[in-house]
Image 1 (cartoon, rainbow, N blue to C red):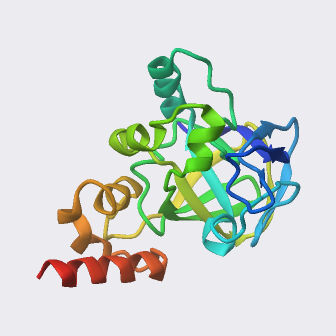
Image 2: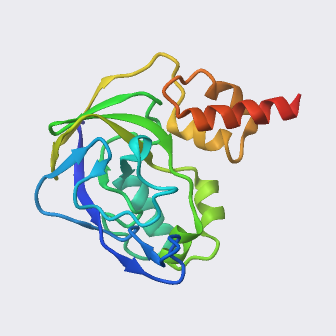
Image 3: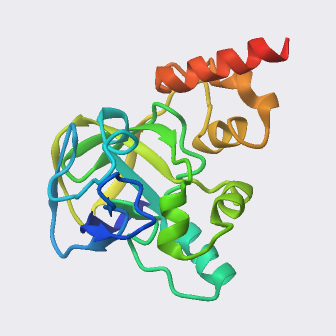
Length: 213
């Protein structure tokens, strides 16, 4: 089955005491839009980002989360989780987001996107959902979604196919990176094989490995 974009979501300004931005504003509340949006090198046009120190930028220009993984959480929490509920720009269907290889390239609409890193859960995420232990539960489930950099700008809309056009041979996946940096440090050496992984994460892996020797 060909993967596709189930929804494209843009953040609205949310003011709350749990918001990570110093101004008390967050863009985690993302809402589906009806038509295509322009995806640029620095992010999705029309998407609000509150705390730019930790969100946005070239390595985190777009965030994708799988509809199937959101369905698991809906059953776990006993409530509906709408598209954009994870703060994702792209809700995907029939795309193995957790199994995506670092550096893998996706043709999505007119844009060319590249898988860079998993999402790290934060207190803003837990506050938005109103689930105090969400960080612990999200980490244990290890379905983090994937950040993407933009290799070619273009419009992306609901229903667009998601085609993997290139996949690096190292095989290091989003799921492995997430587990290596959280619950399974024995996976840390694998991260050094993923050249397209942001250098900040690779350097962290080197430091942790050196400390264990």
